[in-house]
Image (cartoon, rainbow, N blue to C red; front, side, top):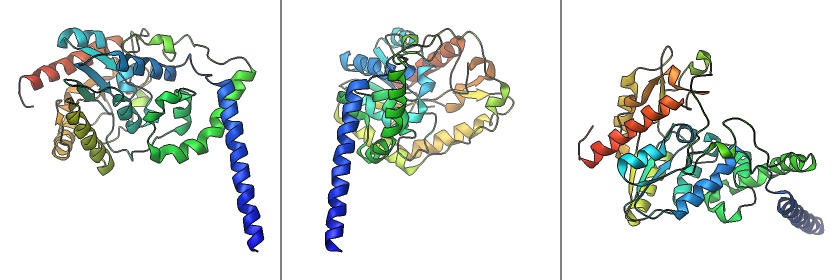
Length: 314
């Protein structure tokens, strides 16, 4: 029996080594295959972040920022360089927060604009993380160590999809819509023309009542300490909220903001209800704004920042 277990362990180790070798070889040969897609803007956003000197504004969040900010306008109104790190929500809040840590310096404003604060701290879709990072090993620091097992498990799915694109010679192509790399400008904003709403009213049904988790609060407080040590300031601002037939009352968001404010060590500079915009200002989802919606949201953030700088409480 003892010899059997020894053989089993040796077999498992050898299998693991062979699997690892094949995986690394395949990834090295075929990656990247998604360099023309939305997620590939990840590299451009980090490159801009690293290139900017302090003081600057670092916007942290999911696609509500990618499809909801005019960073050039924000920069003009505040007099500070801006980088928009907004990416797909399936990456999870911790992924976006870790991106900011690549270059936080003295005088920076790190502004978190999450669409939810009740996350578990884990990557929501590890396969999406693979598509985002691919073979850019120098940027693997955005992956929390606790997510490594999930990344390993999802690796075969990425390899299968990437290998399919490689074999069919369809990899690294761009689509002619908002979800391609070239739809983003130098700030990290998606500037694909979005003149009017194209999503149906039904997509706004049953909005989720806002909540927060101890994990998210604890992590943001740790990020606040990280920012303080770097001489930067962490702020929390509002996220676009669809306002119409199915929306929750604005008082719900005011109450949530006040409750969250008691738990966070950093400052919440927004009245979340100020970010309630009519359905017609949302493009293809309850988080992505039309061109005019982007202007409204940006100017609301400018107003919040100015009020905070003036020491005026909400």
